[in-house]
Length: 248
Image (cartoon, rainbow, N blue to C red; front, top):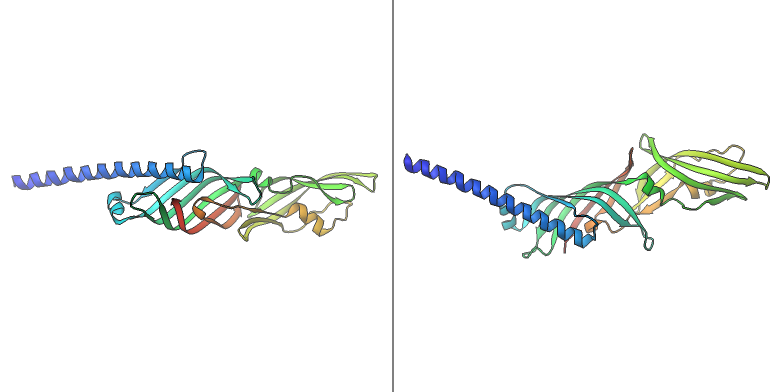
């Protein structure tokens, strides 16, 4: 009985030591992965990396991690226009089946899904920044984007100028728009055109103001836009990818 008690104590002690070593190892690995991701993606701040599953050391021995969560507070994505970016907030990605090289210089996830937010103020920058002529002497410009309810974006434009050189126009009009992903771009498309009393505006001219697309390129690891929907604080995007590179 004494020998059995000693054996049980040893098992408990060794088990406790294994848990401690395992947790220390995973904490170190998360820090290393976060630093490498920050350097690879040229991030302003260190991302959050959470390696899930227990035990960690047996996953390492197998050369693959089951589930890794990555959180990036702010990311400047390319827009397709030279030198221009669009800020994406609170990017959270869940990486599955992360394999890595023997020296941990590279890591690739077999699949990844995630979510992020683009604020309305940030998306507004992608609408035409300068007033555009919709009638001789009359300009229009999108001045705000907001949640329109029921999954729609409320697009507000200002119309101003002088009709026929004599009649002043200074009006603000709004329209509800649908937001979707088209050809890897966020597209905002007016459901119906805004009415401007006293003015007969051609549809194609109005849509050059109300409708626009924004490309979002070179997201971390090569993930791509999947879906987008209007929300209270901005548009919520869903991203998805395969063979996503976390490092290397």
